[in-house]
Image (cartoon, rainbow, N blue to C red; front, top):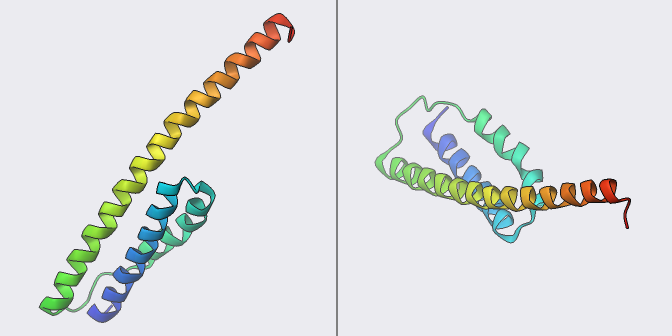
Length: 106
């Protein structure tokens, strides 16, 4: 793959990662989940660069990669917080069900 196409791939991935970060920060989990396969497909479709990019392209790729990794870390942080909250809710619901079962929903 040539350096120009690789740079376009990084640009596209960075845009998608930013969208996913926004959805995660807003708690829009369904929208985040909808984008995840697209994100994974783009990563899988990225190939090694056959030619060395010029200095400007290389610096832009590094900048984009740092942004992608930063967005990914923020997404992970938001989803981990959400998962912890979900576990608390599920445990509370499970305890309510056990009480209802034990006491017949008095």
